[in-house]
Image (tube, rainbow, N blue to C red):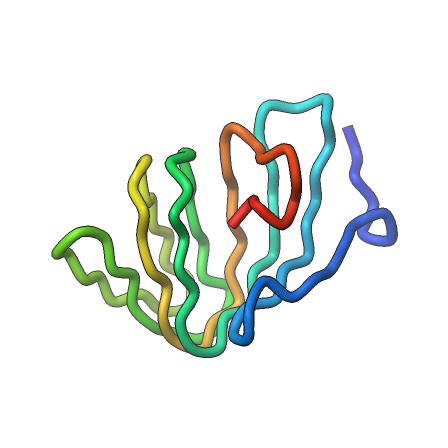
Length: 104
């Protein structure tokens, strides 16, 4: 199944995060491009994986702090977490949220 870039939504989540969202109701996951400049909090309990396309920063989960940089992947499990830094990330989430603005 193909989801065309021109058919995706781009929106601002908060003052520090912009998302380009690739979502199809026919698949059990979603793929998003997340731009973070500052701090992005995620309170979702979905399975979420990140791949850092460019930049660097940290991911905080519980008391664990993990440094990430371009080329790294990170699995956040089903836990609230925070992404901090200046990064472009590919985000894969399952299950997808009903509303893309609730996705990340």
